[in-house]
Image (cartoon, rainbow, N blue to C red; front, side, top):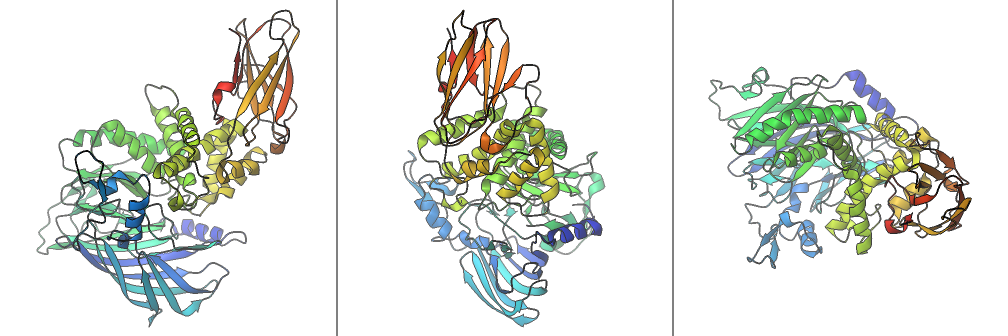
Length: 626
């Protein structure tokens, strides 16, 4: 929130030129908004000017906006979904009796002065009125002049909103006492890409936005402290001195309100939070990013928030090294009072609880700055990319930065995935986020199975190639909207392997991996060779690694390439002898090979000793002589 306007012009020009190459395009927006917040009624009014650039080959006759706050009304689609899903989000329900057997949607109980709403009036295109129609959380606009390819238009509107009592993410006066968590608060242009319009109703899941620049002025009671997306332009006018660690400086002002002016370059959303009792800490780093921490002046949490400063610095430094350099000059961690959610250049998170929990949430939500707010995949259609990949780097970072390293937490994710498979409730990762039958199925799929996409990619192409893939994916697709095919093709380019089968089976089906040792012949003393029979029981193929442990304590590995992969992985354990066997074709479910053991006796044979392959029945992966 320093007074640094946009990133360098060369940086923005690079993004726009890259985005409009012959093989890729994306739309662009420039927002200017002025909004005034009444902290007594929680009603805000504003004006928006949006320059929309059509970089597609389509002539656009309509445009669509999101009006997210309209979801927080009794009878809304979000309310109906909440009441009909088998395992509703407990944060969005209230108990009707002590035994917790009867619950009711919190949205259904909202009174007129507690609901959320967002309404648009006076819509104009290039100064001429255009027809608009509000369809709950979507605004449909019929342009008075079609927008041709390569052209821009100026869209202006007035809006009025009411901040709902916080049910989920956006809202007021939550259980931690935060006054205003202002996410999804303004009329937001829907994304239009090579697939068409993504004007999804707001049912409770994730988001998708257009890359652009934001210039936002927020007028509010002078006693409130703000933080969020963008760089603060007028610290002196509002009495903020960052040289004094973000403290509020008392100025001799007679007016009752102050106007906070922010600018944010190349983001796809704008979020802010405000409270009269925020402590604001500013932490400088040696890698160019200033960290801001805003949290309630609550004696019970101050020590934890102070302790989280250095841990947040260490986490961002790790992400910079592991994925790529965070491109903005500020990031804010803000107590928002409801779970944790990623936003452009900031996060809103719960502020109470233990230090480990606070750091864990920061690790995840800040990780989204790379996988969603720089690599802006479509969260609604491909939630496993942003949630799964963020979970992967979060777990990796917390493990690497831990003083006391236990079991790698990623290995525990395999158990959660297997449990979902065993439940019979798994749905493909390609399922739209709103279409999962249960919240748990969505969560395990997106967070856990999405994480395993990367950890299992290590099993397929090796750790070095995985790390190169992550870095290259970031460098080639930052400030774009990458798709599942983009991460697959990046891994193929890095490794030379064919991986289309992996993307299809793992993300578009519920095919499972299950390999077994079905027979071992001649494992006793005095036999020169041992024959090992393997079988693919599950539909999904994989290359196979087999470890043989001998009674004299030595080990030997055997690697069976997958024919359709056309790839031979580098030996992950060079200190152990490895034999590369003939490849295994998917069409043949059985495989046989021999082990020459003339000098010793076999003790144990194991498929995938690393545990990186998501085999759903690991008990048939081991043959042991006892």
